[in-house]
Image (cartoon, rainbow, N blue to C red):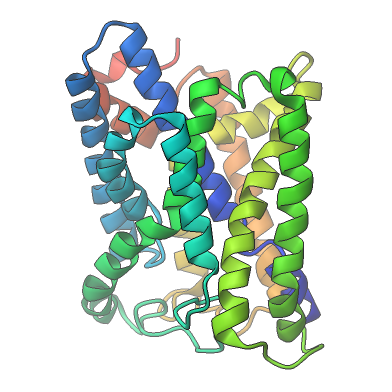
Length: 330
């Protein structure tokens, strides 16, 4: 249980970081298209095609593998968020601030403090029962899920306009402050839940500390994204083999993400390996690390062969309406 408490210090911090990177990528795609003379209307349709692919892939992933899939929420967020690209910076930042404050308000809807066991949609006894249980749950996750990602998405768009992550040397002060404040807030906000899970303290008041965990988790996600950008300053001029291999995973993140969904499904689904009741938190963390390492190897091989992952090829082909050959890396 102590390991579980430590793990909770960073639980939920990764998703806001992914939301920042997602918004950043959307801003850069739109900027590149506009620089090439593409009309705003055409850019919207391009991004809507991308959102459709994410929604479909997210639905299939949720039905077949992992009901907690986030691709569907990203797709819905992108479909709505294309209009944000027309906003001025101050409105984007004000909206992001409003969402952080809204998340921090006391409410009983946070899942950060929950002792409920996984339901049938998470760990179904058989395939057909799983499909039946997941059909009504997936839209509930995908549609309200966009609210949780909206703040990081907005901040990512703001950062993408300035190419903060691509030019970290110009923003070292901002990135340093964001890393220190964000990660610090993320750790402090997670402590009450972490200590409870580690059985050090009693269960904290859910309607107060659950939202605190969620809101500071958003700040923690910003902090980790900033920290990685600062580390990149040291590595980008002289990247080693390990750095290039890890970068290859990021460049093929969709393929690696879906691959990991398959591994987790095989490992934990009751009618397959059924390890959900047998692995400790520490063993599950080791399995997660091993799974990630196994995605690094094929991603690096694809990098060496100068090819994108299969799902990156798919989404680019549909997004840009080009043949597969046009989106492979040569």
